[in-house]
Amino acid sequence: MIVVALKGLILHEGQALLLRRSDTDETGPGTWEFPGGKLEFGEKLEDALAREIEEETGLRTAAGELLYAATFLTNPERQVVLLTYACRITGDFMPVALSPEHSGYRWVSPEEFGDWLPAPILAELASSAAARRLGFG
Image (cartoon, helix red, strand yellow):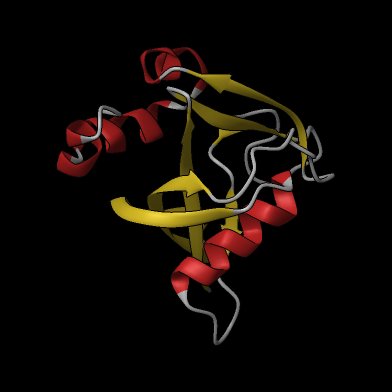
């Protein structure tokens, strides 16, 4: 099975939003990540990302530039294609309202990414010309 997942690096006042996966999550319990989720059949990429971010955080966003694309296996039967976009908040800034999929959140500066994000995400950001140009790599 191939799954397309979308993530958004949301920058607000110089800090990016990270979410902590719940301890019961099947892939990566307790790890930190950018908000996002799976593409549903028939959805446009940017619409799916905006929907997932709003479901997970309550924030309304718009996708900007594609920062990186990656693929990996979560098990021998499941491959994930991951697309990570730079995003901006649209409308008024609101407090984050977490969904049950996550157990915490924090706003961190790009310089702090190494303290929170898994090594594979850091490597993708570091190798991305778009992420480096925007100050994330």
